[in-house]
Length: 147
Image (cartoon, rainbow, N blue to C red; front, side, top):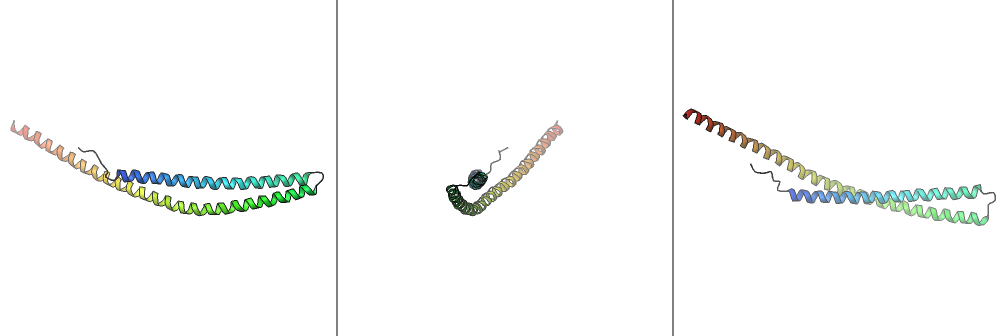
């Protein structure tokens, strides 16, 4: 019996590598997005902490208020840039999701084809085994009759 060979095995391997690469890109985009969100949360935490320090101090120095206002402006500007970056990343994630979906479809298509070919090969091998078994039985029976 001959061994099962799938002619598109190299194409399947290539498609699987592409799928893994697209998934890695998607993971990187999600990681980058998460880092930006964490940075925005850290900025907000620092702003609230600075506010509490000024509000809870026994005396409020005008210089501290000016510094707090400047810190607030800087924090808001950075958070605004982060929001823009997150929106840009969201667009890239949507595009990457489409690429990932297409790569997944290509792999599944070839895998289904491989499964179908393996099933056909298995059925053919079964028929060959049955034919060989029948031939063997007939040959043995023929020898038995000639004795």
